[in-house]
Picture (cartoon, rainbow, N blue to C red):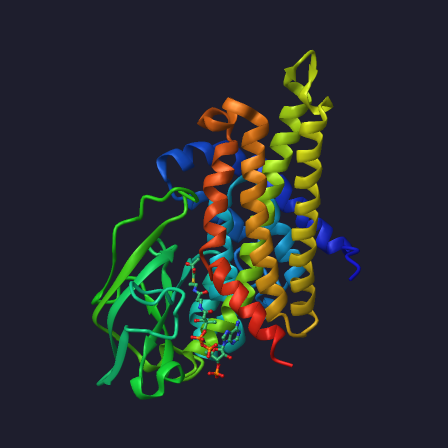
Length: 380
Ligand code: CAA
């Protein structure tokens, strides 16, 4: 596959890089320490068109391709992986699905403000007893006068505290198992809908994660996304694209760690010379750079297939599986190259490790990615 980026794609990459350097990098450390949500930056990302990158301009999106999205995600995540996931969830898990399967009513009322970054979205599939085993949804929605009554609980929801609109997967017909799952768009503030406290996380600390609770929460019929019974297919197909987003986030983290390690190695002296002159360090940098490149190519490949309208389920899972491992590996090596300095907050590389770990867990653990890849491999 040949990745000669177009002028437009390069411009998006450059815009994201400049924005990350000038508007995000400086406050990232403080926000990580205080676990502070970056409201202002998210607003500015929206103004740049980065919160609805792949949404068609007809619905106020930027109308860009997945390759551009990957390039922007890498640049943003390189300086702040928390912003990476906020952006990825809104773009891949919320806007993409609504653009593809939402009704005209949903697109006009909800997708437009989400695509402009005026409103924020969340994707609520996981539950206390349905994480990897996502077909086992316990949250119920029953038909009542005026719509559907939702009862149940969701867990680990990124943007859960601050999102305005939540896509909630519910069981509407137990007999039909996962073919009886339906997605509802639930607005913040709907009676019976509350969120739990913000989780105190190891990494991606300035993004918010929480549980959601539904007690007789009545949602109108027109807020069904796609159709009754299509909720699991909606979630799986949306997650396929989401995995490209998280793979990009992981590549960004890995690249950030590599840059930090290289810069440090070129200035730190030991045994009478910069440590970059020692083969032990050079080999580490060479391995890191090779892995970053391979992870990036896998991610771009998945994005290119998606843009070409071809199947990309396996490739997206491979990209996420590999890139998330590379992010953890590179963050660990960056710490090793920094020695003791890598272990303290002042030198920033420890954040890469804390942020990297979650990429092996959310939007399908590495074990789930292997299941997806193997099933696709064995299909034909
Ligand atoms: N793309 C499209 N369809 C898929 C799919 C994929 N990647 N994976 C499974 N499916 C379809 C299957 O084709 C099947 O469809 P039919 O029954 O119509 O034929 C259906 O889903 C059920 O699949 P299986 O029979 O294989 O069911 P399973 O229980 O053995 O496996 C699973 C399903 C693949 C493990 C699935 O449950 C899964 O992907 N789990 C992980 C869930 C996940 O990624 N959660 C992340 C939460 S979101 C998150 O983290 C958001 C955040 O805030 C950051």
